[in-house]
Length: 266
Image (cartoon, rainbow, N blue to C red):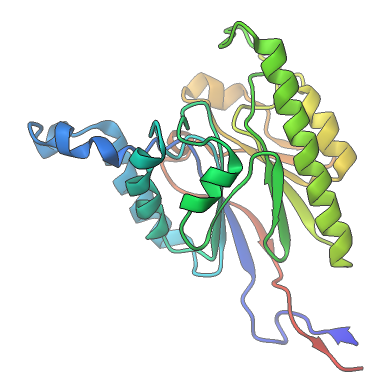
């Protein structure tokens, strides 16, 4: 049997977008907005409106959106419900979330999976097969040489993060091998995988060994950071910062892939 090319089958290519760090928190709206005029509403709400407008202009119904962390500032599953509902109204074929340092609601995968809406996926030590693209990821940590440690047990935390990413990459490789056809692997890793001097974090070697082709991250929120954080290709991996404020709250186009098509009889 032979596979038809997507253009011959009339199927549009699947575009892959990235956007992170919009810090939704709709659970706080009643208290905050009861005494604030529209001009003084919380910044995250203003930013959410920008995201909604730009998302509608760019993302198609069959596209994939990668969200590497800090989509929500909710503290638990109860608070995050309205944020997930808001995300579910954004047009796309699939969206994949991974945890950031502000995603306190993002606990064990079993619990997270139960509250996701249709078309929403999450990765933290696992991988998902989205047709032409396999997406995996884990809760990230700052690079070892980060000048501002965020946890007194940072070494132990880092070891846990690396172990989870290894599990995610192993599952991604298994899914790719089982597919019997070439598929790209993308990694969601919230923190930039480089230290303050631009040297790669140990996770970069793990990604290289797994044949990863794309790594998306966010977390950085100043112009100086956006200008100095390494991006582009290294060791066959494309690194892209998708922190929303660095992009004017516009989804960043990362890939354009041919959709899977049915096989024709020989």
